[in-house]
Amino acid sequence: MNEQVKVKIAMAGLDALFTHGLPAMAKMINILNDKEKVTLEDIEQLKGDLDAEDYFK
Amino acid sequence: MIMLSRRDKLIAVLFVIFLMGILACAPSNFTPAEKKIYTLTKTLQSAKQFRETGLKVSADFYKRGLMEEETKADIIKIANELQNAINLCADSLALYHVSATLEHSEILEHRIQLYQALYSKFSTLIIPYLIKEGRVE
Image: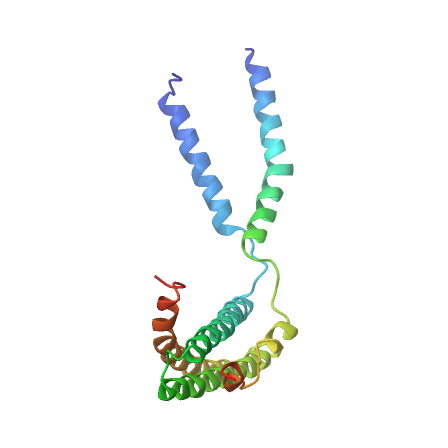
């Protein structure tokens, strides 16, 4: 294969990596990092009644 | 078999290091305070769930006459104290969520210690029943 063609293929590969590959990877990492942040409502739902006795009735 | 030259191997290794660097430096959408809030919230959610499961299983044992009154009283007392500790942690966590100050962080840490001690006590009481039920090996 001609050297110039090899260089062009390599450049196209790098271009694809930077324009599509890396943003996709960053997006995937954010998904893996649990992108959903905790809200005050989530924290409020942690609260509960002191109802242990009710289970035994 | 494909034979790689030393140069190609070096390029491959450098590329892998480059990718690992990207992975390590990838921006996370969580600040340290948000990470703390997230971890604690998930921990407390699972604790609340464990309390509920533990109470259901132990109440079932009690209703089948397989638990003494004294044990039942202990479980009720510790389960209520545990929920109270979770409620206190939730209050502190909400304050920390609004304003992640050092003061709020210290109060939260103190309450988390209380919660951990009660969770440990509750687990000690409940785990024998979960094992008997085959829920824990």
